[in-house]
Image (cartoon, rainbow over all chains, first blue to last red; front, side):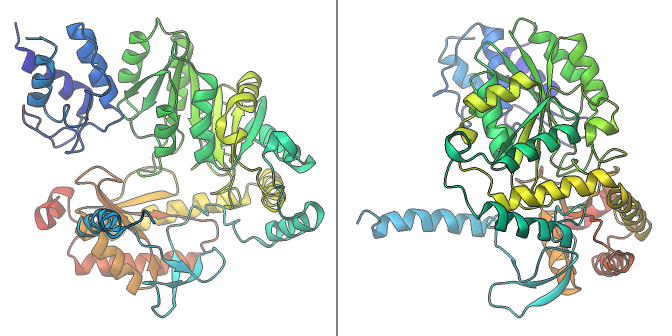
Length: 83
Length: 415
């Protein structure tokens, strides 16, 4: 079974990287500050995580910083006891 | 006084960060009516320079058209300068109703409501129409005003990859349990100049029982055989549920916007849209000018036909000169330079050559996609475009970017 990190990374690649984009996304790639995920599209990432892991992420926790890389997202999910 | 030195310092630092980050915007002072030949003072205090304007949204060249100016002047005499009221208290004149009726006829919809701007129409419409039981599914490149309007609305938000109909279909399937689904798109996308696949969008909307929202600000008046916009171009007249558009671009270029579409949706806006309820009426002078504009564009397609010819000439000319442009058919023609500094340098040199065009770079466009956005107008004559082409060629040669591939330009200047 793929690790949580890879599930999230694959979702981001599928959802946000356009065909022909010359971008490599890794666990540490800056997503929001790097312009890959704009703060508006971040909503669909939040909803993916909530549905996938059956949690509710309050808006106060869904900050651009918390979503800025796969590693940051993993840290955030730990707060919700998602492993 | 609460604005003490430490408070001032906070703002100064923020502004300085914008300056050092290269994103500080400066106004160029135009010392003439809007048109193809203008006089510009830039930077402030510099000697005025005569330049050809290649960056206005004056697509039909009506911003300073004598008939429009005359109609506006008469409007000033007949209905005064201001109304000192919002629409629903005492700010609705006969001419406001006349303009709404003319827009309804022009766009082929059921009803229309005016807003102070299309920015306001987009800010108000979603919140007025949708609830938290509904979902908005927007193209990722929609205009900033739509993004703001969606943020003000309690409905769920989702996005699809730009013009990716497969992705949109996935999203429509995902949201089948919502009460209402609204697909949201621009008609012509302002940065790339491409058109929405509106026929496919309507097809998907019918298949998945969704409504369609279209912002046709960069299309109304000139896209489509008679200028009715993207909906005419794509053969879906009458099938768009909500159209917003502006009177601030092709349709006279002054100000004002509208929501046009299904009768009940327009009525909901009249009852609930906050920018309509709490902002002043469009001034009579602008209303009368806009009525005349609609008469002009309804009477003949001459101006949009000329714009189409200018666009074809310009796109062909730039391509033959060896510059990389975004393919498309609209009068928005981005010249791709990829590197932010290069886009600024080229714009500066063009200005020296008497051509006024602006470089766009991140965050306005994605990183590595810096460009100069050129916009055609029916007010451009052949000599304007020939001079502009010569300038682009000269400057392109200086930077060694003619007849180069994207990768070669990036290898020279970086992204």
